Image (tube, rainbow, N blue to C red):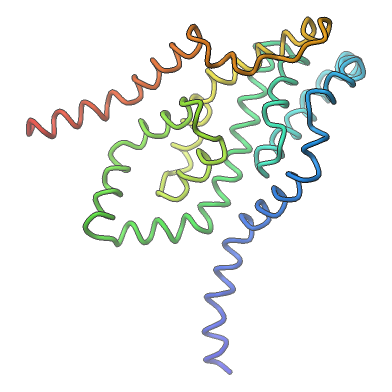
Length: 246
């Protein structure tokens, strides 16, 4: 009986560590089917007057409620993150909206990061720490360039937000580095989409839909790619010094 209990204990501990990530995965799967037709641009358009009226009467409550919803959307990887960003701009303007959007997205990202780090991340990090050969070289390379890599995956528009939240947890990134790089790394894209949301009043009046591809316009993508190059600069310098034996 004792032996059976000893064997079952590690399995229970493993399940307990992975429980938050399992809950997130289940809620995300349910949300993908139940909310995809609810959290839409049409829903925002049809309820815009009621939302603006409630905001005018209850500004602080609206801001806190908006943040809570945004955090839940990101933490559980629910559909509607882009719509939430647009809504932040629509309700609060570019600058206040950007502050609320970036803060909420960062908090939600931290939640899913911690869930992944507690479960899969802990096992992966342990294996990489005790690994040798190629695994050890990969681990050392990640450790040497963490800041650059973290900012890069946030700045590149092609990297899904969910991936950028999970991947750092699997390679031993600390919470501090993850939080800082997430907050500052999502500011450029966050401001762009929030500004689009701030102009939704005119879009609604014309009966159009917002242009979410604006982030790929040269005048916006150019500066973002410049920030990507800046994030990669320390990596390039280390590589050059390594080749020259400096």
